[in-house]
Image 1 (cartoon, rainbow over the protein chains, first blue to last red):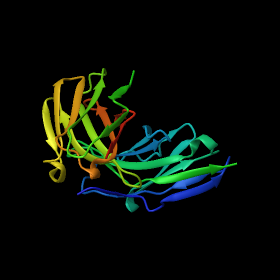
Image 2: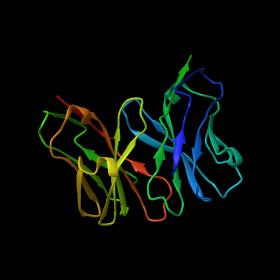
Image 3: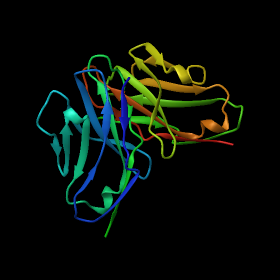
Length: 115
Length: 112
């Protein structure tokens, strides 16, 4: 069965610095998709970035990038040059490519960016 | 337009009364999901439709109903609300072959 674990419940960083949020996952499938989402203060969940397991290159979108370590079943989210508006809860999720029809989410990491 | 809409945004319900939440999308996505989100917890999948086929999670099978009269519309129905149903309910959709899901803004349900 698939499982997604985020052990960091909350992180606080100073504006304009870099932060990394951890996520580990469990799956029996050899091919899967990994996602990071952001939940805003209003509760809305917004897709940020995706990593396909069969791609070796780490995905990058804007100031978001991923640190994909397949042997460790780990997919970290890196936010560079953090801004106050990056303060939110970040969720990691996974969906198996063949057998998966829905995503399994982690419990989230609350990020606070302070001036 | 990757917009998923949900109505209402806020819902107040009494214990024992029914609740009906609505989700719509005009992207022609064939899969639509309903999640329950409580504070400090992961979004929990309740059920999803792939086209007209409804799939419900085993542990919420009897608590939630749903209908999808057409490709754009999906509802979530609670027959008799309990206090434990207070949560954010998130609808999402995904196109065939698509990877990520697109979420609606959510409906915050409070049961009193």
